[in-house]
Image 1: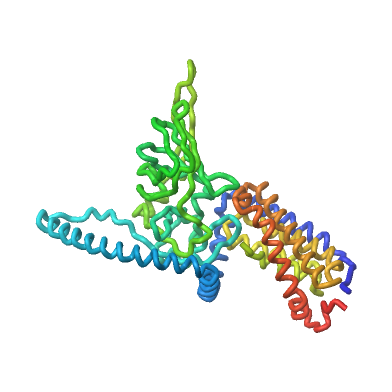
Image 2: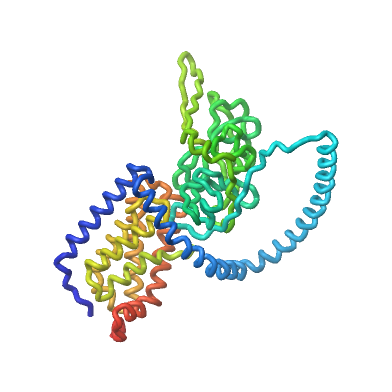
Length: 306
Length: 139
């Protein structure tokens, strides 16, 4: 049998550690993840990053194999469908090659130069999911040109989230479904924002200057008004029809990306100049004034840099 | 779906060894702090939760060595308490994402997975840590 006698210093130690933990939490919340706690996190992540990469290198093939075995029937069907898609894509690629050759010819003919607005892309592997917050750890960091605030998409081009913290060899990605900021988007020709919600992956679409209804399965894409994402990247689709009410509209948005299934992501070097990005305000406030009856109401929303 | 909380499991198992309780609490606190540092949630959240779990485990550990199944159930219950505490304290400190879509699944599957792992590995781990081949023979 085990010894049942509690140590004389057990309770004081327990209380001391609890108080220390509470102080740490309060300090971290107050400093909003910056300051000493931010430095501590960066240091710890830098030290542990090689281990995480090694673990991911060993574990990922095993996980893939187990996944493959459990989904073998589905994979056969997917394989056939993918072969068909590949054939179509190859045909399309040949057509694109023809177009590119023609474009190059015209560029030479008219002495044109490219505008240089191509966005740099860094492909990164997901090597960890640190906690229940759905954040992702990727195997690329500042040494690969990753900077805090850069947008992240998946390999299909769907919006995933933004870089929250970065070390030399790793970075932490926070999905848009977790927030905390809203993302400026466009649905059809109407501009609005999508905001994350508690206890669900579904986001909320808010259009404060709605002129026409939105319908289920309408695509929601990032807007050029966004300071966090380049324009035109798909975010999700509308989950239910909604009509404007007193100039505003609100409905659900189902994100295209399933964060839990992500293995590879793409970090966009956007805005092209990270110094500009760092100096931009964290959030911007937009306000819409609408008239109700004899009075008027002002609706304000924080578009967190989004 | 069946993702264990391995750090919490190790903390619980360590509380069954002959390591001094103060050391067990410190190990729990530091382990939690390390997980917090590597994650994106508020610093100290898991440190507190793991310390509480370690303390509860230490105070109730005499009930765990009755039989292998009891050890597993005890570990599962402690893990359930830990996950609940994590959600409650996290929510109080603004970590609303802990109440995300999979909260019920986490409350169910994390303790169950820890229970199964404890059934299999606890006696072996205790014997290794204590260097005592007779520990946890359930005789």
